[in-house]
Image (tube, rainbow, N blue to C red; front, top):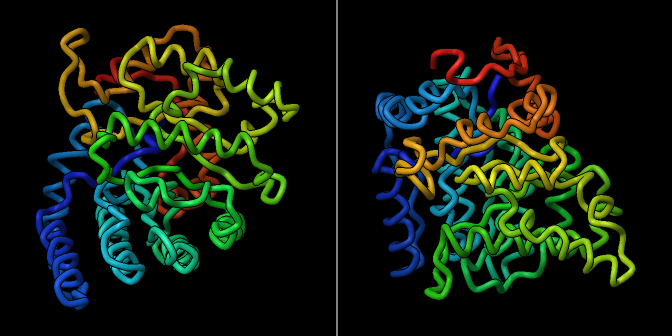
Length: 360
């Protein structure tokens, strides 16, 4: 089985974006609230968007299941106030739940959180804990996206290790679900979104976790750092040396019991570096397909985000490690996932068969 732990509904029907534009405009012009009931998207529209987008590529690439969340860039937490973000999260997460209901053997939900920058952060964290509980217990979701920069490019929030986030972490531990640390859009012209802000966010969050005692307070808390961890594998020696110089625990002890990395790395040598530096038990297969990079790599003839092809080309992994990366680690880190799949009648059996071998 191949489980893609990083999928976004980037091909959502246009009505969703239009509702969001009207929501922002209404609040900015008069403080008015747009009703979620005004958003109308049919099941057929959802089916078309999925079947012509994510599902089409999943079938082509031999991916069995995707952990699916709202479009990360569209979270845009800086707009409006905490109630704006709460309504937007409800709308976005409910749409993901509908996708999962229509394609139960192909998608499992991961939720957006209603975060807000500045003074409303504390209240929005409490709202986030409540929304996470709703999505997990009522909608069958297995995780959440956590934005380390709700100001969207201006980095005005405290680090993720600050106690302002503890109500959310308490709920994550109670529900036994992980968070993927994922920034949203960048409104800072000095930080392009997908290739600067996203990778900076991954790198910054890793350093926050390395230099804190968060995991002493929450020993079972789990985070996934996407996009291969940003600069982390490339500068592994710097992190090790920095912590050693300051008498802090080794990086392996400080974070690797709680922090995982995905394979959204879009060239072979980068993928090779990821699996060479990090233990296989800390790597989860992911592609973020139809996301930041959508074209075909002229050097390989495959799309840049066809990370399964890249991982298949890395021959240094043994069968056990390959199975762990493609599915076993996701089933362990997203600990509610096996039960969700069993309820849906989906067999969660690791397999080392490649897409090429299976004829997909």
